[in-house]
Length: 536
Image (cartoon, rainbow, N blue to C red; front, side, top):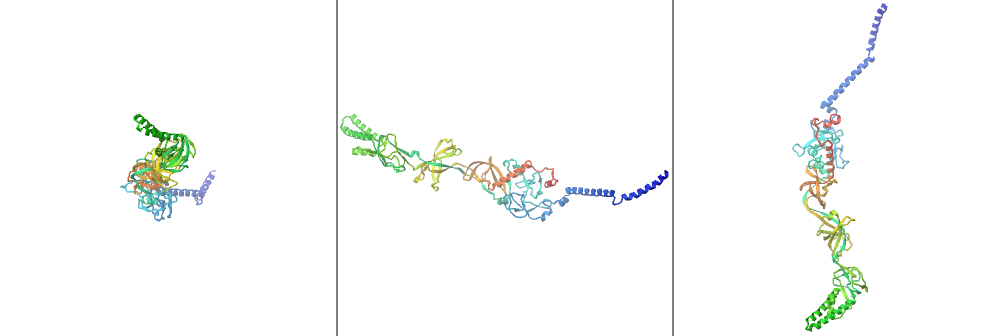
């Protein structure tokens, strides 16, 4: 037993001695695992050191990840961008695919640290200028800001935010809600075709046009009626439309009552002659009164004075009596023919004087409230486009039409050469609201549905939006009651571009809580790295 132990110990020791070198051999499994963990630890240490250097050593950061403004920008090719859409970039000249404007070359400008930055954004004005630069904002992500010019991952320039934009975008001050001041620069003003006009003090009136119908002047219409029973022996005006002059014969009428009245008058005149020698004054006056009554009766029957005088001169009773035209004009109505029996009150002929006519036109409620009797009006006709006649408002009807909701207005016009014929259509225009005040071109107004906006040219390519109150509009002009003063310039061309740009700037400002500047705790100049994990 003891011998076996003694003999076994050297044997065990020998086995261990032999087994030790076999485990430590290069091809053994234990040696491979140790070296793997050693290499892995070294790699992790290098990666950790690189990450620390990336975020803490600026030179190492720029070497591994060059940004806009680095030394590599000196070797890049020229870039072109759109003045109204800075996110449009191109390696060669051309036109903007959105607005069609010619692309402009991006000029390089010095950046902090001695590097160069290719930027088409407007340079910030000095602190003593009219505008104060707050910060720069990422155009695609307004939450990313920077205190110095920079570019985002897509190469787009950060948009500068000025103090006046920050105040105006929220509706404070004089700027309307939802609008911000637009700064495009003098060169972009020329390229976009923006034009300005000066607000001046002047007189403006609103023209009103209405379609009317020509009607005869009712005060110049005469009707010839019979006042006795009789028959038409002869018609001198025997067709409608015939022109007659005042005093011309119209017709000859036979009436037994007229014949007997003539005889009575002749007898009364004879009695006056006989009673001249009478010593009784009452008898002489009675005979004279009978003669005068008979003569008056003839006149009341519309017997012309010339017929009565002829009766007195000749002493012969005329079988027919001629009726003359009471006025000059055209025969517009004819109710009788030769041989027609007439009775008292019957219409025989109608004579209308068309030297002056009426135009009856319908005006809407908002137009009619400003019309006054005596206002001057101008008339044009489709039949004679070159003719313009001057007239006036002669009457305004007291009631509205319930069907058309319009008010009928009567105009009076002269009618030389009978150019205006009854029932002809005519266009009447008159000027309303002749007022004096600040006047600007009508094209400068931007209608939003609830308000009117204009862009005031502040100079140096800056345009300030303002809400205005508009009064009278006409002849391509508008009266401004408030919002713009005389002498200020307003945009009249391409102002729709200013409108869209102003709304866009205001919307971007609202997305960052009212255009607030970056937090003081955020390092300046590192806002542009937020996209790489280095921002807040």
